[in-house]
Length: 83
Image (cartoon, rainbow, N blue to C red; front, top):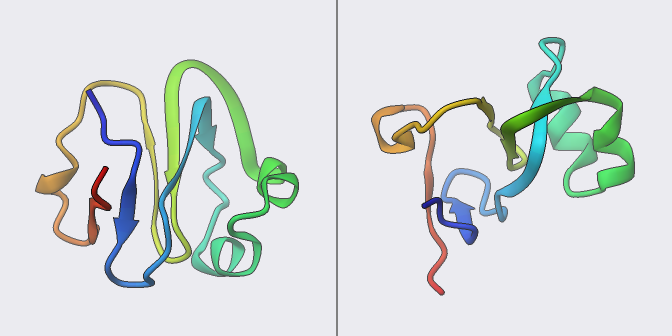
């Protein structure tokens, strides 16, 4: 089960998650920096994919299609924001 209260310690932003979507490969740092957390702007680079989940804060993003331990990815600074 995934935490739905993730927070990024690098940009101090809440990590947003979108079920059944992945990020377009053209996404870059400036896209998220300028558009988070406005869903209407983010949709421009979201691709519908059943069973996937797109995560993003202002400085990092991931598309997950299978069970993944995000703690193994050294560049991510996402932690549980406490429930």
